[in-house]
Length: 223
DNA sequence: CCCTGATTCGC
DNA sequence: GCGAATCAGG
Image (tube, rainbow, N blue to C red; front, top):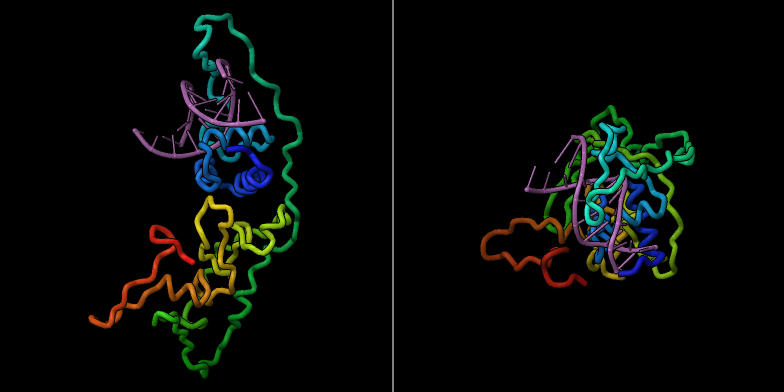
């Protein structure tokens, strides 16, 4: 599998996003974890928290494997990294909390009847006032690169996912047109209303039960 | 053992 | 340039 521009771009993004090499390899498909790491290094991407990288434990006896089992020690250690490492984190000053919490203003009075939304499958969820929004995992704001290729233009890629768009997968990872639904989510759920209906099946009374629609993975092709 | 990233080196 | 093999730490 060749390293096309698109694939290189994915690699960069996912790598900097903190995904492990294995995950990236799986995402890209057709490459091994080693291939991903090798490519990442060739691209100049640098170690992120690596288990084995902290400092220099000992005088590392470099692996001398195949050829020349006994050769005079060749000092092959590479030059130290240049100053180029400073990751310029754009200081969008704010930890700008997603507007989702803004939509739940402190409502002291309880004149508000319990808001319960019922999804297509019959599932319920608590209203905005019933539960404090679990906001803490608010990821830092991050700039995403423009779509590198036109065929991605109208598709919701992995990078486009956020807390308020439907992340229901369309097609399968690794396929050329794999992307995500991208509709506005059913508040409180990771999917839009339609896909909540697919993802959450209400337990219907015996006899009325219908065969479940296909799940995103494992079943016959969706869509 | 599993995982991780780093490094080397034949191709 | 690529990536399997290998290393080393968790």
